[in-house]
Length: 275
Image (cartoon, rainbow, N blue to C red; front, side, top):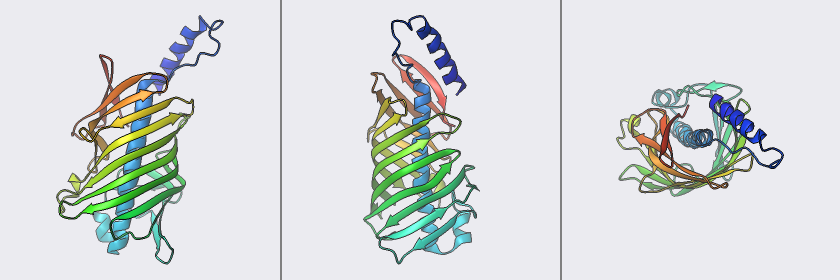
């Protein structure tokens, strides 16, 4: 945030010398701040996916203490309810006013999931939110996930459609995220949940309140990989273009569990910390 403030301050000084001639000139968004916010949004939606899967698995097992022992997100504080009599069925995860997960993130509000069936595949799940926040970021809107299952290889594949708005804390504004993604949920070694991961590719449009639109492209050949073990994107490359004709790439590394990504603009590189 300090870096963004310094960038804006410097830009305002430069613009001041030509304000008479360019009164309508807007200060451009900072690439690193945009990359950081969109990365946080990407991780927040991956978090929601895994958290919802844990809640569904917990409800299916009906063995709360045993399931929580192996959970990566859920603690005792969220209240999980299911209405099987509704059509479609509805699961609500209620975090109350403050609930700290095993990942250390603080959540509040509700995630509401509806589906004709939570136990058969293929299936369609719709997620919506009621005053839902995670570490101060408020998420509103809808996410639809159409899931198929490869039982032999322990892989679920989903077509994801997102239309959400994220309001960032500390006066950092809000952004609308519209995404069309393919996600694979790779469970790998069944008895070792640490190696579970989400692999994603597709396109994302991330529009800031200023009107600047960021279009993000991830290929199936170099997809984003989110590891449950560390709750971070750990590999994959993103190509970014903006509505004001700028472009750059973000490289999330070689699979190591850290919070570092590398931003490259032309021949210049810079490390950014995701959290």
